[in-house]
Length: 236
Picture 1 (cartoon, rainbow, N blue to C red):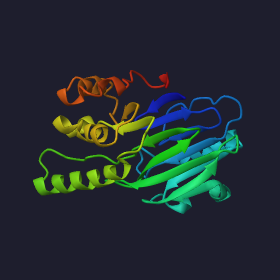
Picture 2: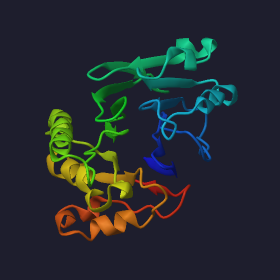
Picture 3: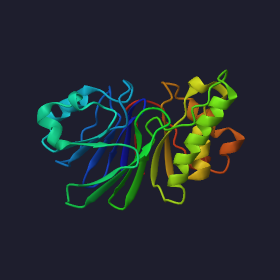
Picture 4: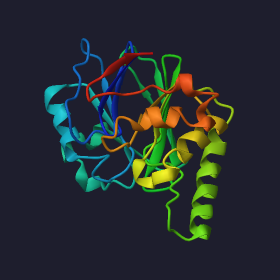
């Protein structure tokens, strides 16, 4: 699998028979080998995760399918593309077909912000994109609010516990200051993945190395990939 970091929380995961584009809103979309179908995911309607520009991809490629969180209004989708669009809400799932006619199974989990997180099974691989499902603890917020947030986050993680995930895209957000790593650490301890790409780090490319240096990350730091620039690709 080839994984390319585009910008913020946007990645392309290219498999043998399909390409998956997550949470694109700006940047250069990588070229896809051959005429593989492109599956475009948007986890929620926030401007740093969704842009109507994704629908322009259908002008350049014939085989484009959209999988959108159901908090994105139907009227955002061009009428001629509604037949290629699936909307998913928390707890829902769907099955699509890749370029070889094999199943591409998708589940949606409730975010602790807007929309959903996606779990995709394709070609024997399991890929998780968190969207904005994170432990959004903030310095200065009432302790009860932060505790409630953590409880909601852990409830969603518990639904993933025990599943094997090959590649995960997970948040580390420097705006949370000293708590920037909490969501990632919770994920790694409760669920985990073979390879994890940090995202939502607002251009702070050093955030991953700071996280990996923390004592809590000692047991899994070798599974965290560090991203150094936009457009960087990895073979996993």
